[in-house]
Image 1 (cartoon, protein in one colour):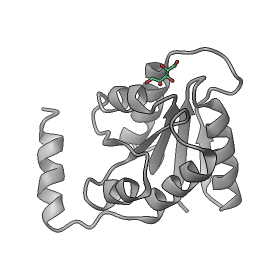
Image 2 (image 1 turned 60 degrees about the vertical axis):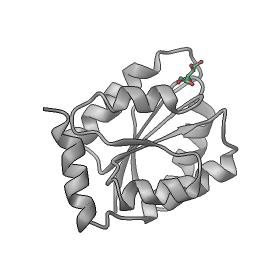
Image 3 (image 1 turned 135 degrees about the horizontal axis):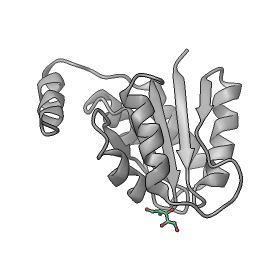
Length: 146
Ligand code: RB5
């Protein structure tokens, strides 16, 4: 079963807790890098922690949640090896895996309701990279890191 590493700031805390329960119920292995209580923090710190863990192979997929998902995705994409996708709809979530081979899903808790956020997460986790001609494009993205 896939190992998921989660992180959030104060804007995403409640939704992270909700989605973590869903993942555990579904049998995923979940590691939670915080926050663990409602407190004001800086989202780049959590994007970095989760991003580095995913880039170094400590987990299969990362999930980062802040108020909009924007700050988390900008910050996570600065970590080498991370392909973070901000998805606020199910179609984009599936395509992020299929076409872009994303390894971190970012969502905005102040944008989404919990029901839609769960469906987005499921669409993302249930999809997989299609390879083929998408491979070369993703390689070109990764070459931008050099
Ligand atoms: C925190 O207030 C908020 O700025 C943060 O959660 C996020 O939306 C940043 O992109």
